[in-house]
Length: 308
Image (cartoon, rainbow, N blue to C red; front, side, top):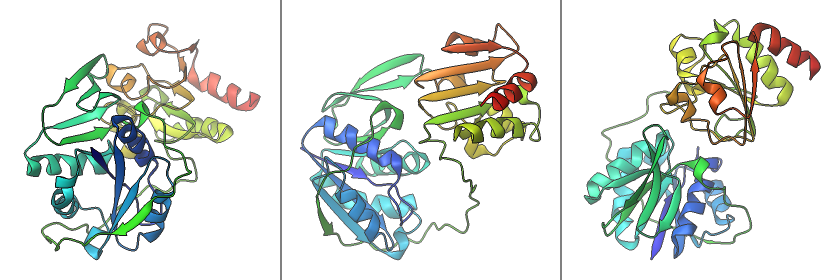
């Protein structure tokens, strides 16, 4: 039994969520190989080789892998799939785009968002916005899995795996990336931050979000937002935390002006410590909060910033 983990990267650095997927693969058992497909991504392959639990790094280098277009990567993965019992990727936008295509081409089911490994063919995944956990057993010869990063610890450094070159498949050419609009921030990445400060519709406007940002800067935290705040235009989409946004599990999550809709709770309720600030004492967020402050955020947050 051998597992293949698809490495997420930007051709320069290894994506943090891949380390969680590698941990999931090692818990399944057997050897774990990882695939680095990119353009000029030799540093990524070298970094992957140093991850504990990785037995072999497969490195495919070609221009058409540069942007991680799923139609290009899927052909490569399917071509080598016969050597693997399990194919895994992190449950990120890239993984959610790529592995359904791989599963369809292999004519097997995909099991999404696994948070625990029961055995080589049985996995746990959240359903109903995290209100229930389903135990899923697959009889497929090959298991295609996306891994929720918050369900597994990140694999550590300390390995010394072999790096082997693999031949690139011919370019499909039907799909290409024509541009990207990326949010640039000096704050920590939302998905990997140790502390997250999120604002909701109660913040009132994009201008008022500076209050949230000032608290985040004091704590060295990432900034998040509820779907209501994103839909209202207060913050960009990539700041959204929740079932249809990013799933986070920091050591400290501070929810400011967030009522706590079930979709938002699904994205942050695994945080180690949850602090809620809301003037509505009946807000659902207080049901999951470790610490709750019933107060006007426009008074409480500036006071907290001053105290810090």
